[in-house]
Image: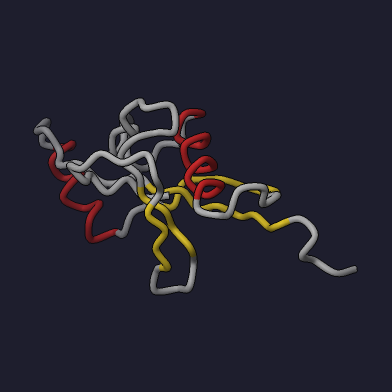
Length: 117
């Protein structure tokens, strides 16, 4: 999952295949019409909140056709790149307001019925 900060409003996910061939989806509004969660509401290295985990799951489920049976094994924080984290930690240490860093989830899942014995 990636919170990309788009200004537009859309209840539909925008599936994207990243450089590693992994499907990601970006939305600016949740299915029930609420605004998407902010990029983060806690420290960028802090564990994902229950809301962030649910949002990540919902993004992934919405990127597949209806009725696809996704089985989730793990949803955890994908730590930001060190280059982006250093300015944040420096500002934090100097008691300044740090710049936002997108929080992303690393999701391990499979589609039921696609794994053979």
